Length: 122
Image (cartoon, rainbow, N blue to C red; front, side):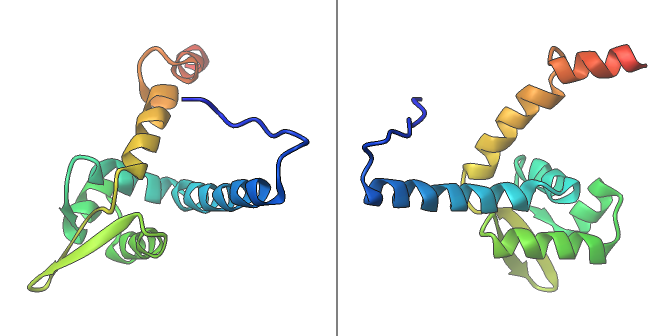
């Protein structure tokens, strides 16, 4: 993957397109910047979950989980499915999974600088 280079001779259309993409990326990053929403996405990477399942996995109240799911739904990151009285959620597309893979690699895997710093602090 090659990152774009901003050049002085770029057209206004190219800069506008880049700005639109930056706004879209910023919105997505804001949506996942809350630890509760991030944890919900981590659980949904493994497959569809009901609100009740997410409550148990997160050790959180239904109101808190529903609030975070509403934000993720508003941003188009999760999709609800109703079956009777139960609502199930799944990832809408592959964007959250791909971002979570990078986050996991940087912050959660055993050999990351962040994990080494945590070990040293203990």
